[in-house]
Amino acid sequence: MLPSTFFSLPADTEVIAPGEVLRRRNEVLTSVLHLESGRVLRGVLDDGFLRHQLGAVEGPFWLDAASALMDLPFPVDMVADTRLQVRRLPIEEFRASLAAMPPSARGLLLDMAQGYRQQSELAVSRLAQDAESRCAQWLLKHAESDQSGAMQVTLHQRKRLIAAQLGIAPETFSRVLRHLRELGLIHGTGNVLNLPQPRVLQSMAGC
Image (cartoon, rainbow, N blue to C red; front, side, top):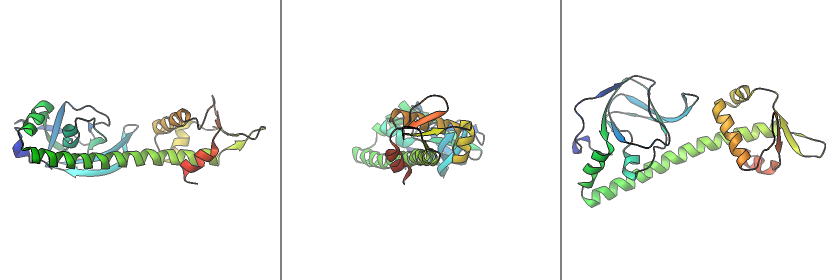
């Protein structure tokens, strides 16, 4: 998207080993990374692993220029797939170089950056929605009526085992349950969860 020759990149390159995390979701940028060589995976980390991959990029490539252009936190996680060589440019210098561009060129870059951000945010949102859908399906499948006719689920297994059945990380399962509580779709303490709005859960589950 941006020619690296327009920027005064540092002479020294950083060498990054495979598996190392370069960027995390919602990270506030203080520098911009230019990938000189190697392959980087984009996605969502769960329990330290990139379980949900959204794509890959190979150098030369600006890894986080869109977020830097829009002054927004980074939308996805990035992990080195191979040995990388990167150059790190302080964000103040990056923006100073952008300010020297003609207004029409800056406007075009901002439009492209906005489109890229929207695609990334939509992809992450769909992943979160997919996890919620699977959890909602599981809750409905294991729900039973109590004496008053209300629906409830008894967790007979550890959350880690339930998460494994759903194909998500335990942290993701806990996060989804917390979100469902905030929405008022489940409540209760201990191993018993009450489902006060099963029809809303059915809609979330796609039933």
